[in-house]
Length: 234
Ligand SMILES: [Zn+2]
Image (cartoon, rainbow, N blue to C red):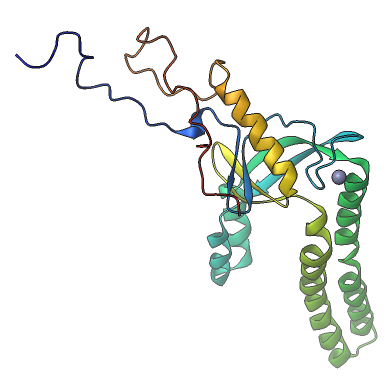
């Protein structure tokens, strides 16, 4: 004989944790905008926060865990195999203004062009090999390898990446998107918050486990005001 007969039944069904992940589509985690895969975004340029003159840019991010690079000591082939095996992707249709979209394309173009110096020097090394100049061949061949590594890396991080969006992590459910304009990120988070507080069915309902009909899908509850998960953005 314990408790009131009207008390909710004790036991095997503790209330599910208030896990924002199930209903949210966007929140900040440090400098990253965490987005549910395939999330629909409000009309705001992801790179500058503009609200007008927007187009959409479909983009698929691919990400592999950074430790994959550590396996390079066993050979580059291992790296590529693991990269492919561990690869996770996330696709979005990003709202973006024309100016920012052009800059993104410029970043891509220059990254592609950054392979040309290395290629040119490598062709030169083959010429030296052809005219039997082994010293010059080795010199230019090494320089071309260096060129293939250095020029694209510098171009990527100094020139291309700031014009684009990239990811710092992808798991089975969300991507950590970097490079989003700060104001745009606020707009996206607010839109996700108001969508989550609407009584729509959550996109990621917890497994029912005998809970069917008990409270009729209303659990999970409204989002706590301001409690949209994650640490403060900055
Ligand atoms: Zn823009």
